[in-house]
Length: 66
Picture (cartoon, rainbow, N blue to C red):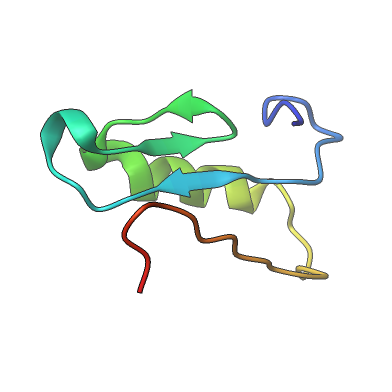
């Protein structure tokens, strides 16, 4: 996993679920982010790329997957 504070970083790892309170997960590159700050922190991190994304991939995991 890369450090988003590193200007040469080329990866953003987002971990998020939609469970309530103590069960929720909201992390950007392993760093916990409050719900109220999640979108703004993500936008700031993505602006660092200033380029087109080459690929976006999603990994879904959990016990109750549809």
